Length: 380
Image 1: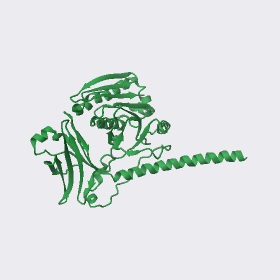
Image 2: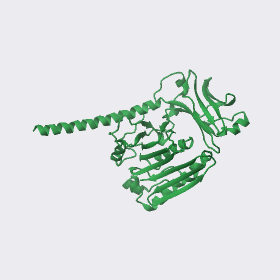
Image 3: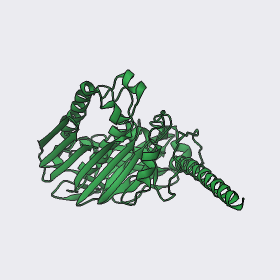
């Protein structure tokens, strides 16, 4: 009798432990949403790099009573100059001033939270540093860049019930999360442009603000409190690639033809806007990823609705060989063609390998820079 009671006690303890884990992860997610809502920073980048150009933050964003300000370093391969961005409230309007090399100015009224900067008044400097291609953002309620160093990462993109509506991913994702060979990240969904809800004037005056609460449920419960949780609207969170030798990313979650595609771009964009020459390999675990009927509009990353209704697990969707060839060719074509055209000044060559069952290709993309890079997109 006492043995049965002991077994029952152990089972009850295990159930309670699982319940507490689930509650803890739910709490962690809610805390991540609330903490991200309080973030703010200024960020600048080049939209297109015809020649080598790099913008690197040299300070954190600081806040005063009526302004926020951040410093950057601007490099063109031959010299480095300072770049200072200040946003100030003047007569109930917001005006930004960007000062290059302590003497050249771009200045205008803030109309959007992300924008191409106004023309720099010195034409020679403007041409040298291609300032017409600089995009800056005044960011609120947006996750700060996450550093990616050499090693193996697992990124679970939006492991939410709304995407995994057939409950296909929990076991696989938690297996990755518990694997010590990976550094895992969990990305949470939220609405695009959430930061536009923040009143900048009230923020500068020090008023507290509460954005409407947002929450996407997840079935995960076996999650370490040490696992970073990042709020990532549609997969658009930022990275800071610091790897120098080899960076490996394995994706799980959903959706492959939208949020995971966006997150792949965010990683590769950060890599292209860096000095890193690391070998980058992205793995898509088809047994741990789901997709939706339609992907990014215009690129035809789509699956038949009838296939999705049976199973939206990527490995099952790829069983439709007729659709798979079109899907892979479109996915591959984007990265081979459109993507690298934005960064021609940042590499000499990119060896791009795209490898999946029944579809593979290896390409050499020519650039106008100096780095010789290798990027692999591999389907498991």
